[in-house]
Image 1 (cartoon, rainbow, N blue to C red):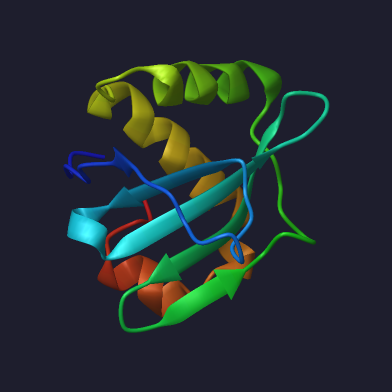
Image 2: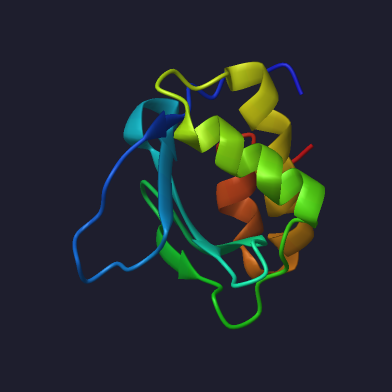
Amino acid sequence: MEQDFSFFKTVMPESRKADIYLGCLGGSVFFDFNQSNGKLISLCRISFHGYGCCEIADTANSLNLEMSQKLIEEIEKDKLDQPKLTPLVIEIIRLNKEYIWTDALEEYSLLD
C-alpha cells in the first residue's frame, strides 16, 4: 500500500481505555490497541471522522507474536517509522475488517 497515512502517537480521555493510541490522516482516524498478557496486540476500537467510534474489543483478532513485537518496537520510538508501521496497522485492520464499517474503511483508503 503506497498511501502515506502519517501515523502519530496520541492520548485519549480516561473513559476511552486502551494500552496504545495512534491517529492518522490528520486526526481523521484513531486506533485504540490493547496488549494481552501474551504480548499480542489487538484492535479494541477505531474511530472515523464522520462515522463515530467502532467498538470491536470483544471480537478482535490479534496480530501474531512477531508482528505484535514489531508494532510495540515502532510505537516505542520517538519518531515513528511510517513504512514499517503502515503494514502492521493495515494487517490488524485486515484481520478485523468484518467488525469495522466497510464504508469508513473505503472512504479513508484503509483496505488493501
